[in-house]
Length: 301
Image (tube, rainbow, N blue to C red; front, side, top):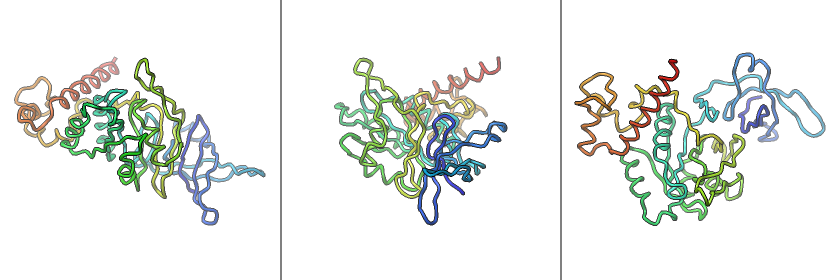
């Protein structure tokens, strides 16, 4: 049988298989020992081949025998075959983390995955500062949606963007990922996080990686771990390639391999002066570059 892994808790899996007679069936599954020997681990989103290994009066159990070719693989949190990342940013409580957003956007470009930005909790932003955030990222070329998850505003537009994709919802704890997912399904399918009144930081409540099916071929992944989002697979020297608005101006740099930080006659810096690239985006690029550079230096030792 062929199926898709829809949930993973420790070494236990749930696999959805389409039966021609019974329709969709969810099986509990274990992975064959050969995967461990070959240092391969099945993950949520993997398309797999499996077979029934135990039958009893209550239910069948299957074993995962083969992982089919992956189009995309994310190491942390571990996910496969994601086609769209929904990057959720809170307008208030917690405040927008645009450094995290830019890291995630760069990683989406690195993976070749479509990225959608969702500005949630806009009702809490009395100063309407989210409007400037939206303007910056739409100028870059990203689609940006405004939502009020608890009130259901913007949910219909969000649903339309999800169809036909396996979608990963990403963002710091407390930004409203679970509330958005519950609004999409119009019921509580995930455990909503709480915002600490004292620190205004989110308490992560999602404990397993799971795919929720909206429609045939359309899934949402609710995952823990994105608050420690790791983009170290990107090499510092290649980071500029994953800032969409930089690409056009890289050929204008005087030096091949320009880092766009210390060099003069830099196409990126000139574009900033001309208002073609936002200064704040460039500043965050520099921070991310330095982070990646430091990690690379540590690995050498």
